[in-house]
Image 1 (cartoon, rainbow, N blue to C red):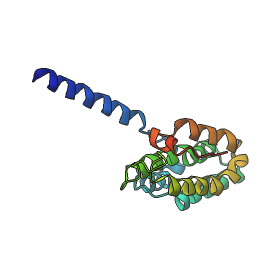
Image 2: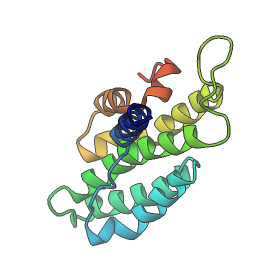
Image 3: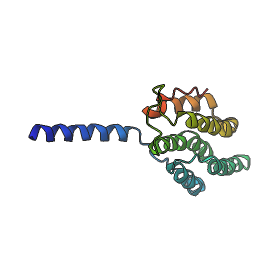
Image 4: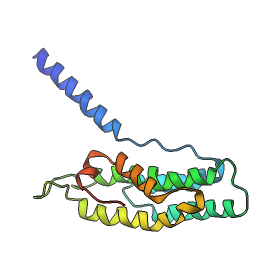
Amino acid sequence: MKSNTLLILIFSFAISGLSQANEITKPDLSDTYQAKFQAVWNKAAEGELPVYECGGLVSTATKMVSQGKDVNNEAQSAYKACYVDAFLHYSNAFFALRNNTELAEDNKPIGCELYSRYIHAHITSLDIYADRFGLNADDLNNQLSEKLNTTASLCEIKIN
């Protein structure tokens, strides 16, 4: 009986560790971007793609750069947070919803088809701004690919 309890405890810690490995830490942005990014982060946590929220943040970042008010590349950090961190946060929430993680006949999660549309919408809406912030969209896409959670990776979506 004690060995079963110990085995269950070890298994629980292992599962807990795996789920924490996929958790994304919210970036700490300057006051200029904090409120807008909180809206992005909240929307992503709902399993909703934060396209409009990121659009607002990118608009603010673009304005700050064009007016010469960008301090310490804060605009770049905010843009990258939307492009990479917010999407990874969304990705984790998306696959935690409904039955998106259940495997279909092709051994891919059921949510992959919809997820594929969402990731491409996210990239298409944001990658055109990468140059404004001195970033490369392909590099950002590679960062996304490398950090996707296990379930999202099973979808085998080509991002670049």
